[in-house]
Image (tube, rainbow, N blue to C red; front, side):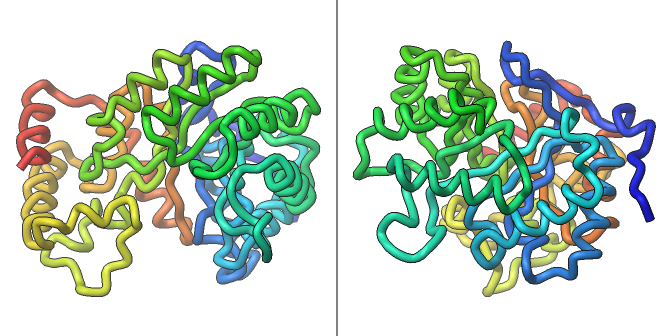
Amino acid sequence: MVYAADENRYNKLPYRRVSDSGLIVPAVSFGLWRNLGDQMPLENSRNVILKAFDSGIFSFDNASNYGPSNGTAEVTFGQVYRQDLKPYREELVITTKAGYHMWPGPLGEFSGKKTLVNALELSLKRMGLDYVDIFYAHRWDPNTRLEETARTLDLLVRQGKALYVGVSNYTAEQTAAIAEIFEDLGTPFIGNQVSYNMLNRSSLDSGLLDTLNQHHAGLFAYGPLAEGLLTDRYLNGIPADFPIHRTNQFLFDQGKDAVVAKLQALNQIAQARGQKLSQMALAWLLQDQRVASVVIGASKVEHLLDNLAFAQNTEFSTDELVRIEAILKK
């Protein structure tokens, strides 16, 4: 069956401008980190991706190492793009990243010129694209001069292979350092994609949000539900083998019971708002206009739609914000 996008897709989600740039993104982007690579049947992946687009998500986030097997998430997205989404390319914001382990050998990771150039070429081939809208350096490279990384990203823009560039997992200080180089080069630097959620507020506490704002860039928040902690699945306890992401491991420093107590208290506020905890968690992130978009993943259509129901209530009263802040600071 030939796919035709829902004509009402832009009436379902809020969308926002990234700082004062010309780029506009949906409040929620769809990430293909580990949900739709080689572990899922293609038809399932196609259904979820197309439902996301029909629901107002026109930004799709990938990386050269996403899969689980390296590159398979890009291959999956590429198959759906070629079959269904290519007629809508002008509407889509397609992003990818390079820097974590991507292929064998010492040149298969980090942010040297050869590595970044080869990684983007691979990504474009896998997805069947002429360019990506944002190309990110996926992590800080402690060994390569920052000027080389910045100049390579600038080159890829000038070659027409990326419209904007960004960084991912950079601290506030690292972000400021590369942003200054981009400003000298005239490179369209658009943002930093980092782990950010109600429980992990390091981006707020470290000054990263302020730094990005000062450099006319936005924050793209991945892990907004802390690998599922900010859902109703763990209100009665967190299992010993819970797969916590490395960026959130510190959340268990005071013990899992302390985290459960926070979840239960937050859930009471969410219920009073007529929301699930996960929906409130997404809405809370988006109250800050410096957050350009929140990157969610889903392997099932029902999970996707459940999360997107956050859009039915995105406003917070002063009392709610005060109560949430008191819970999070415990």
